[in-house]
Length: 179
Image 1: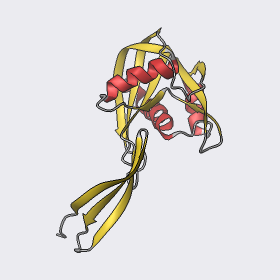
Image 2: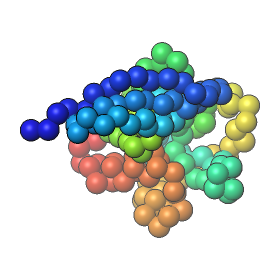
Image 3: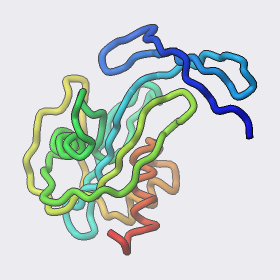
Image 4: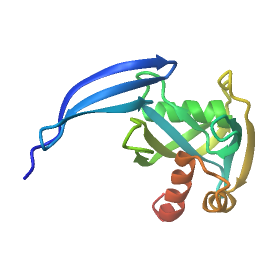
């Protein structure tokens, strides 16, 4: 059995707002040492919010990397020390304009486990009542309530491209009898 990977050091090289660029040093199983860059983001949440039994809330906002509008589920980054389920409720209120009576964990995944430390927590929200919080100062959102089947079709056809939204929708569609 080969030797294990051994963590050697970690240092922040750059930081701005919620993001930082970190370098992690490791000893490889063959004894060599390697430094890996990591974009440190932390916890992200996505919320599949049911406004009605078969209709969900989507938001559309401009994404500068894609240089286009993006349809997504309400979601975003957790604040420092904020639990994922608390972040999910807050993001549902900020982006979707609703508070959930019931928030159920759906799945968790790493959007890119090579160079990004982001872990996405995905939830299903039911019992929604209007209770908006102000959006972030750089968010200009359009909200829409659409049939779940339309949103799943959008994810399958590439109209929804953001990973947390896509995984949440498809995970739910494939396992909906459990939820």
